[in-house]
Amino acid sequence: MFTLRFIRLILLCVVLALAACTKSDRSEEAKRLKDELHEIMFKNPEQALARVDSAEQAGVFSTATANLIRTNIYGNKGQMQLALFYGEQILNVPELKREGDSYYSALLLLNGLLERNGEWGKALCLSDEIIADVENDREASGISEEVALRVKSRALISKGDCEKDLGHPNEAERFYLEAIDLMMDGVKHSDDYWVIDGLVMAVLEATEFYLEVDRPEKALALVAKGDTALARLDRCPDMPDYVHHYRHNNVTINQALVYAANGQREKAEDLHQKHLQAGKPSVYDFIAEARYLAMTGRYDEAFRMFRKSDSLYFAQGRAINTVYIQNNMMAEYKALQEAGRKDEMLAMADRMRQLTDSIHIQERKADVEQQQEIRLKEAEIVSRRQSVIVYRILAIAAFLVCLFIAYMFWRATQYNKVLFEKNRRLLAEIEQREREEQQAIEQLEATPEATLTANQQLYCRLCEMMKNPDVFTDPDTNQDTLASLVGTNRTYIYDALRECANQTPTDFINGYRLRHAAHLLATTNDSVGLIAELCGLSRRTFYRLFNDTYSMSPTDYRKVAKK
Image (spheres, helix red, strand yellow):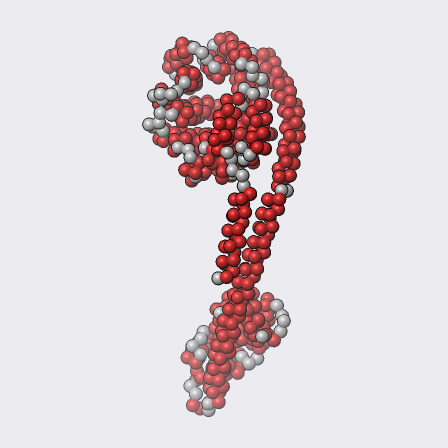
């Protein structure tokens, strides 16, 4: 009892020490700075990073909060290695769950980077962690149930993307559809456009998946779900006009692709015309329209549309990257292939190959620079961990471990004492029982033979014969062996042992073997395995019989028998 109280006292001291050494964020100042950073992180990421560093040094942000913001900034800048580095620092940090949307946005961003980097196993594991987190600890993060559904839906979509990249289309389909069903059922009455936009995105990505794996007939079922998603989006009062326009364009041309792929040209063309009338197309809309035109055999129009998409893409100041090659150029390459324009197709393939090589070289250079920065940051982390506070925590932890080990050692000693005393009592009872059995046999042997029954006479002969260890230590000794040695049949042996000793022949033989083994355990240092063999038993059978008979293991018996 004293030991337990002492441990509780030490733990209380540790908690108080940690509380005294921990600096809390200055909440209001931190909140105001986060809002400012959100405004400038896209326009001026370098300035945002500098302000995050300053805020961390001044104690406005904790290290975990600063790393969360850095993950978002570097991820949006496309600096994958740094985003991954800081993203790994924020995983499973309890205090960050209070950040709510920002925390899960960073995790989903990290998930996308892992997927893009080809680390599908890590991405799948992180998706599972995100899903489990929003299911079990949603209240701790302060997010609404609807936001939790969006986060879970995006994590399921990420799992679908990973399974698709791994070549498991059936698994990918299951995750895509689960994401759609989750949002369809969970946000029926929501008026938050950011939440419902997750449903639109899920429908679009599942549709693209069916078109990519050449299962367009399955995409037909998603057309109605796309219309439902748009209808729900339209009822949101605070939805910006550009979101309304952008999503309607996306879904309309996406549905036109589905109908065209299924040979329903009239429906497809109606949607295509609707899309053209909407105006203000995005790069995605141009690419999707070009794919639609190629799918319907209007290749010249398709290639003009590809040129428009390129013009808009570069007019927005965006650089050529692997996503551009995969989405834009690969779509045009497939259209050239379908049109039978072999020379242009080969030229496009060469251009994609050259651009891919150039991008890889640039990425390697960027990776080297980012790795240098990562090493500097790691050195800073190591330096912080060498602070006085950490040393104190480690010293307290070591003391607690030693205290715990001492306590467990004391418990083990007490347990061994109790067990030893119990085994001693068992040994005394066993020896008393064996003495009584031996006295009964001796009394039977001393009785005049004329007064004994046939079974008693046979039992005496068996007991006399078993005084020779060679009889029962033979592994092959059994009921037939006993009958042969005393010159009778096995039935008489069984009857005699059952009447006089209330034992079967097997129990009778094994009783002598175990008593012989007990003698060897007490008088020799031979191994248990050797003793079992010397007694005519297998190791496994010996352990079982010995435990059943003596209520302790052979090793424990040896300990008490030799004391």
